[in-house]
Image (cartoon, rainbow over all chains, first blue to last red; front, side, top):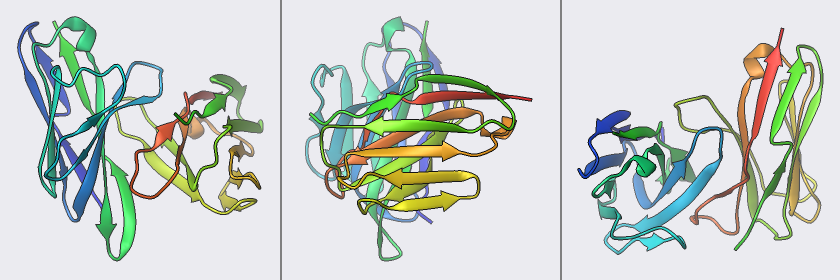
Length: 117
Length: 111
C-alpha cells in the first residue's frame, strides 16, 4: 500500500514551453504533498508544500509564478513549470503524506526528469 | 530553518569494508529517516527512528538515533557492490510536515 505515481518519468521540451508533472496517491488520501528538486549528485531540495484545497507554501527562493502547484483533490497534485528554460532542467520528485491502513505514511514518487533544450 | 549536516558526502570503498555515515543537526527532530536512492528513481525508505537512543538493524545496516534526537548514524558492515547508491538522511519536526534532507552520501563499493 501507500503508492505514489508520478508522471511523466521523462520529459524533454523546448525553451519557453510549459510542462506539467502529475503526482498521484494511488491507494490513500494524501492530505499534504511535497515537491522537491534534485540536481545531479545532490540531495533533494524542498520547493513547496501543498495541502488539498489550499494554496501551496513555497520555500524561500522558489518562484511561485514559475512553478505552479495545484492540489485540487486528495489524490492528485500537479507541478507546472512555466516558460521553462535550460536551467530548469532537473529531477523533480513529489512525496505524499496521509493515512493508509490506519497509519501515517509518507511516500515518494519515482521522480520526473525534465530536460529543457 | 532546520538543517541536517550529513557526512561524508562521497565514499569509495572496497567490498568487505565497514563504513559509517553521520547525520547531525542543532535541532531536535521528532523522527529521522534514512533513504537510499538509485539514479533516476525516487528515494526508498530504509528505516525510521523516533526514540532517542534507538538502534535499529536491517541485515548489515545498523541505524542509531542520538539520545537528544539531534543526530543519527548509519553503519554498514561488510559492504557489498549492491550497497552502492545515494544515502539520504531526513528529519521532520512533526508528523505531516515536509522532510528536510541532508546533502546525501554517495557510496561506491567496488569488488
